[in-house]
Length: 353
Ligand SMILES: NC(=O)c1ccc[n+]([C@@H]2O[C@H](COP(=O)([O-])OP(=O)(O)OC[C@H]3O[C@@H](n4cnc5c(N)ncnc54)[C@H](O)[C@@H]3O)[C@@H](O)[C@H]2O)c1
Image (cartoon, rainbow, N blue to C red; front, side, top):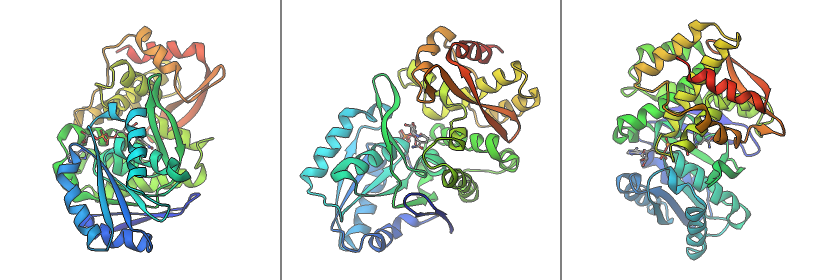
């Protein structure tokens, strides 16, 4: 078992091991001694696989669980689903001593976290991530959000979970493509902070034994969140590949998954960094090799004109400037502010071969 303490505006523990779903009832009872109701939020793929087992272990601890299921996919991370979830919580008469549980991937985690932050001005939220991406990234750090028609994650708050339970056994049912999406975020951590992590990705069989790598990524994120919880400086580095990645997701009408879009976004910004003279070409070669090893794309079929309006709507824009995260070497990146009118050039560089 790996345990990682996250010191933030709320301190909490992240547990990583096999078999933890069966322990979740006991763990949640220890967290909420007076809780009665548990609202489990899950999607239409994950619910049928794991919601019954979770309800069973919650009942064994004297909780009254209920399950809110939404249609799987990024499109459900919307205002409509969010409001339907709030109405559901009110109907279930959840109180502030009760708890919500996000059982699913990053979409479930972001949506549930936002609802937990705003229902009754905040109730406890436990994250039980079931996708690799959610384990290594979205379940930790307290960013919660829904998408607006104008763009990704445009409505949300910082709201730390009360506990994160990563049961690596649930990854066995995760489709290969969704697993690769999680690897894209792991590559991001390696590109940002750890050559050793990138080396492991070239030799380890992640599907066979993911615990160690998941714990390493969470530790990297914990350290960054501890220093900059509210994203005013260093935490922005975790957006490597995301400005262009979010534009790709938006341009595709969310048909291209978040992980794949981030993979392409990282490759495009690294190409730009090489062209602009910030980064050696060996860094791009290494990144492209890794992406190819995990069947992740490094190019997209959109034009700069198509991507630019979506990229300009990005949250990292501030007035007339935008902060890009650019690699300066393998395992090292920096924040680089540009006037917004230069963004088109960076996208064009990224699209070159
Ligand atoms: N809050 C953050 O800090 C943060 C960080 C990174 C990404 N995100 C967000 O996370 C989302 C992407 O997360 P995701 O890739 O997990 O997407 P997702 O939640 O849509 O999950 C991907 C797919 O895998 C399925 N699935 C999940 N676990 C499964 C399992 N164990 N077995 C079978 N199927 C399973 C889901 O039903 C879905 O079809 C995006 O919305 C992104 O913006 C948030």
